[in-house]
Length: 477
Ligand code: ADP
Image 1 (cartoon, rainbow, N blue to C red):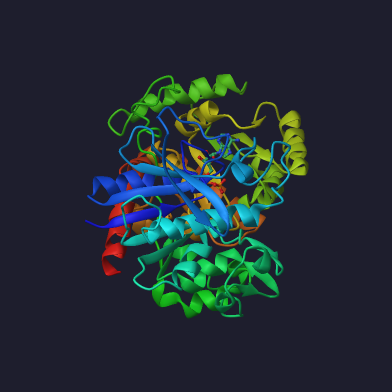
Image 2 (cartoon, protein in one colour):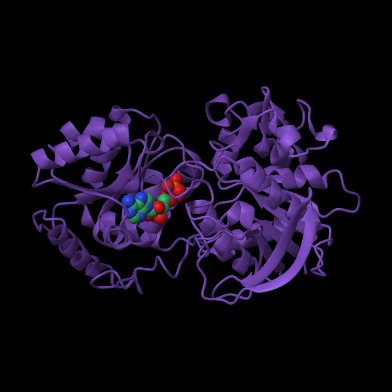
């Protein structure tokens, strides 16, 4: 039985700002189910939310700081969570990265370096917790110093570093090295130095025994200049140690058969009931209730990464076609205003809801016919997976996890029942429009359309499936 220490800056449901928390809240229990002994370590933020008790466990000193280690459990599971308790850093309102006002913490480097140092002490069984892992699994730049520090230890556990998004690297001025008291051996161009900056992520990319990312296609893409942010050379140098493993989804929370947010739950045997969700959705967002008009949906942060500008470029033509478009999101104020303007001018065809709305997100997945996800890059992506589960056919750009999880509807894939959506190559208005038109054409053949829906609904995106791949990776170490 492998013993695995997971290190992360956020873990759902304790604290979440994005997909990283979902992975770190779902993968450990799935690995535990497969027989691994998994424990988590993260900071004891003031904003942590839990229904479980929290106990004092031990105290250690790192880098002249006295730190307590507290223990709790991941709610609803048997997974032990250790909280790094250092009130001077973590006992403030706000989230892991920004304060209450939304300004980045000025001491982010010190905060996460402390997390890394304590994780190393625990990994080396010097945390008075009477447990030594075989593997330390680190996630994103905040944990990058763990493999670096561990590389200096003898008789150390093996290390895995997972990249959830290369766009965030933890770069700080080079003086940070002195501030954090980083050993000289780690400070050079093949170490933590990056173009004159101090780089947290390089600690993971240089020193971890294995590197993973959240889809096979993204694993290849980050070895190129377009996606590698200057680290493509290092990543391609390490390609023997780099693999992509697709994330799972929370299959209970996103299950059309048991979803409490939708009017008439359904599954692949009762797919016709999806119509009821569609009518309810159209009524809710004040569009004409029309069962034969396909509803296109988009739920996203409204940022360039997600290809929102492509959608805006397509809207003049798209809104002349026989379809409705419902968008839920928030982000860039310029995009928000442009989208609102289109909706105001086309009240019979388009609806925009600005903000974050979990309930509407479920109702959109259940009620829409097509889901739009024209991302410029997408390490894994979740909504294309939820969409397939809910019989909502995704249109995606061929990048990252989107390329790996959506099979384009072409004569061959339609014939052998593997097609689950529509895939386009170029990040251009023309390419997206063509995919939209292809989807409209197939929508006009109900038998074909239902087959596409069923193909997607039958795919397995459970965490257990992903956890088996991580388990196989741990076995190699
Ligand atoms: P990313 O993590 O890059 O934003 P993902 O597709 O991996 O993209 O995950 C986004 C998650 O956030 C999905 O679960 C999506 O439904 C949800 N989401 C994004 N924007 C909203 C919103 N405005 N309202 C509700 N849920 C949202």
